[in-house]
Length: 312
Image 1 (cartoon, rainbow, N blue to C red):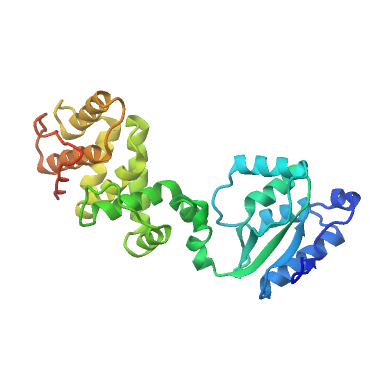
Image 2 (image 1 turned 135 degrees about the horizontal axis):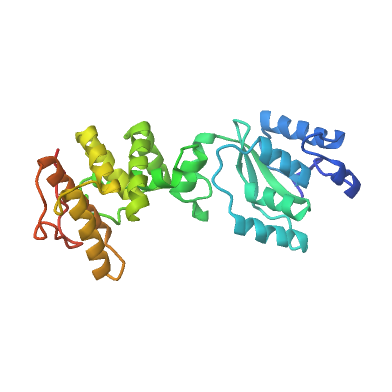
């Protein structure tokens, strides 16, 4: 293609490709790696067209693919089939490397190259600022969980969901379950507004409840976090009692909470509205910290009702 050069990173014969090993690289593969590393350290001002062999792809995924979002197996299988059947060509899509030396985009294509055992060519861009990754491929529907995973955050899916709920529950309208936040806004909130260690603890408490009740982790973790900001010990005890069903009285807050969640879910054809769930949990928490039992009259909430205030 005019305006670009083909970087000499291809294996010329099948015999050479088969002899190349990720553990003991051939001289040709080693030369490819050296040239690639040179472009990573000294980013070209324009994209370069590079041919990736399975051996080179394996080296990149093994050594340069840290903190990427989870691979999409369906995509890898489809790409590999296209490669194997010759339905693959040079497009405007790029593989990207960050200024920190890591692969920032393209892991599924590289994995497909290995699976198919076929090389492919691609435009490659070097020197991407790692701090800009939330803005990459916005049109490709990169999820908040993808972004949190790329950032190396443990329990990325649960944390991303919990941060979204925390933004809602601590905002002007705690019942606005349809509130929209960009990936960048959620990651910034995680880094600037909430304590990562406390949030991970809230995730663990929510996971314990999910194992016994099958309630979703993200809103539970957000609520635990808010409760813990008011009283850490009571928040932990409330969730532990709920998870283990340790309450002795029939109308004890945690026991009656679970009973009402099951009842309303059954009445709603197994689709419990998120605002109703959150309101029930808040009401049970308020009764728990107040040292009192719950009644059916109190445990009523319609999706459009105002969210109860959190006591503590």
